[in-house]
Amino acid sequence: MLPDLSGFDLAKHGLSGLDLKPSHLWTDDEMDRFLDALRLECADPVLGMRYTKKVAQALLDLSQCRRCGRCCDADPDHPENNGVIVQEEELKTIAKHTGIGYSVLIKNTYREKKPGNRSIRYLKQPCPFLSPQGCKIYRSRPTVCCSFPITNVVDDGKTLVKISVRCDYGRDIYKTVLRMTHDSAPPI
Ligand code: SF4
Ligand code: SF4
Image (cartoon, rainbow, N blue to C red):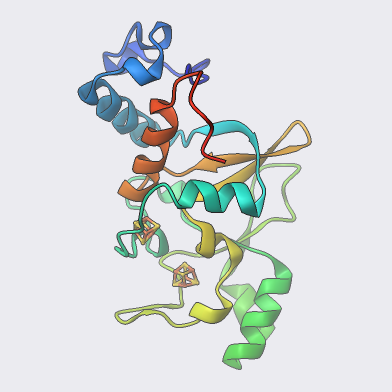
């Protein structure tokens, strides 16, 4: 597979030429350095496939969650990205299950800053529902918490799969995708 590396400065990370080599032929060292570079640049890869629950699950099945809780906590390296996408309907469900007022919950969220996506809300991180025992609202947690590190992004009207390489689980999944050859059956 040749990932879409347009716009990614490979030379800056000492990876010049990687864009000309099919990713299933990358050495383990090249693969790790490439993933480290993505992480450093906060450039989570977007796959050219439509996001559906079935596709997300098939990708999640490629590896296993380490249950480290990092996705619930603030990311000190990228404070600009701290937030858990939450729909207003999900906040209403959380309010119902926890007894916390919707207006109180809303105060723990902020709106997307980019124009065009202002309807998207985020729970501030560290997530207010994170406890030493784990998620306090596990049964009513937002959808994104159920499918992380597989998320999605809307591009040109299409909802595409995005993989967070913030954690080893996401790295494993993306490595498997990159290791597929043109002839390999896709994981879905
Ligand atoms: S999804 Fe990733 S960051 Fe979140 S608990 Fe699992 S391994 Fe950790
Ligand atoms: S709602 Fe639960 S699973 Fe989701 S980020 Fe918060 S603590 Fe983590």
